[in-house]
Length: 247
Image 1: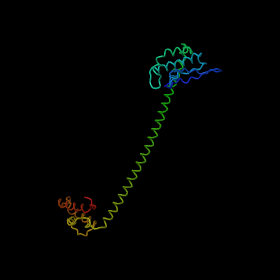
Image 2: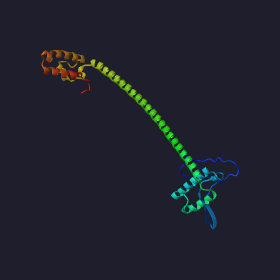
Image 3: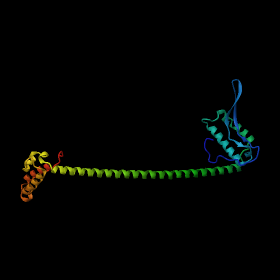
Image 4: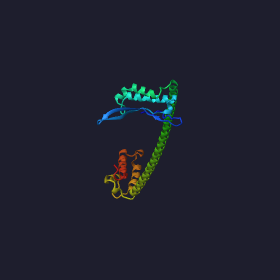
């Protein structure tokens, strides 16, 4: 049969000599190249001679025969030709001459056996599906765990890189501050800022800071100074202390 049946195969429990397998064949006779030829048009299910008298085995065989005839009526690739289907009645009569029809008791016993095997098959299918689902859930959980570990490791690496770059930035900034303290303001500040602060061109940044403190005390508005004059000193000081290249 085309479809796998849960109740198959049926094992023959009979013992003894002179047992043969009976496989009915539908043979088509024709002439080829002027001579008679025969070709097998269809093959029916096999039954052992020892099982013909067994009501259960005979019911199972007739069940397969009926399914075979049903598949022939449906047609399709590999099915017998139309003339084989047309002679289904005659074929059944020929089969009944060798294998008696199934009894009611045999049909009942075989139907109960078939339904039992089908239920067992369904239970196995459900158990296999549940086992697969459990295994898939375990696999996905493990994959998620590994992904979380990779994410955590990457986050820790990025954090470490951030703090390394932060330390490097602080180091460079400290070096810049140290270098700024050792060079003259005239090298980085416009002459106009130095003029507002009243400093010479070769004044250092320390001179700029000191001069700013003096002017702040003298001209701060809280001490009665001119706000506009204080603003001019403050802007000049901020321009003098701004790093090179920064707007």
